[in-house]
Length: 54
Ligand SMILES: [Zn+2]
Image (cartoon, rainbow, N blue to C red):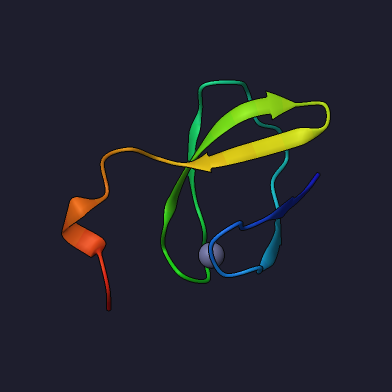
């Protein structure tokens, strides 16, 4: 399925995802938590304080 990163807008492919899974955007490296899979809904993973800014 195609995932769209809510942070940078990049689209990437994953074979399968599950609710609660943490995935990482290959483009900006942000970690995303899967909230729903049909349709896909993502949220920024909570533990990201190391990577704020650049
Ligand atoms: Zn991204």
